[in-house]
Image (cartoon, rainbow, N blue to C red; front, side):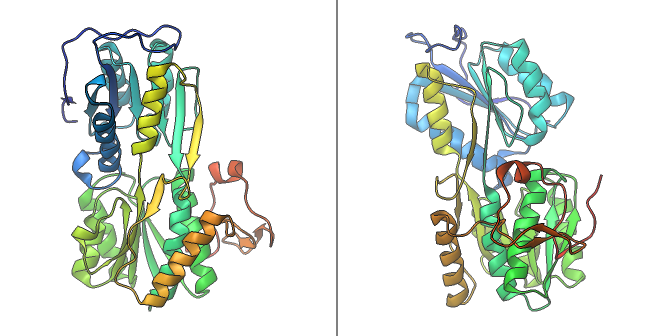
Length: 359
């Protein structure tokens, strides 16, 4: 793991909080720490969270001081980094990967005067909030585009870990893909990492060699897109607009925008209105948005835009029945939609996804 990189590092004494009331009026800045599972240079997940951190700095100026630690492994290393930050006197910590969750809860108990926020998590406490985006809405749009453009009817999907967020995205993509093109299938390759450009590139190469003519990813680097560019197939960006890495291959990208959430939560902590909440925002709220629709016929782009508008307006739900499992059994009846609890605990594949769920 790379060492601590402090931005606007300060030797000032830590700001103390009392029973989660407002930060006291004083000269010391409010200190906020961020931990990232990958490098901020990944041009994906960690990069976008760091853009949110920079937005906090730009918004608050010298009222707030931020620092971050990148390349934090999920597991024991997480607890060590969180303890280091909390002991150094930060007032608030944003932990930005699912696998940080257990350590967040443990450290929150040890440091009850620190505000903790956990991205994509589900465990909360008096001083722990959770937040995420409804990325699956964007994956529905990707499925619509892929269903219209594939010529081989084989879509390659590079998946990180078999957690509900990733499984939900695969299924949302596959449901819309099959709605548009019932003959298309999704071939999933698990790489068991969030960020490993070499593995991501190898997975993309293998999928293309097996006949995939469109690549989807739930990993953090642009490596798969770069392979798609080299091999002359289409692909989608992940977490940020990656068009610069694949100007002829990227069709669009699901972009995560954390800036306003981070500004709002830091403000709440500073003025004493912070509460342990669970936020799951969507395209309509602006936490998720689609990059420009490129490298596709006008009619496909127009269909994608229409679907995006329908999702925002509540006219289409990504998990709207009928939906069938891999074995053909009905999961959701026509006219029904899956509720949030079912989405948050999803651990199965739908029809159209090849392969099995790993343990």
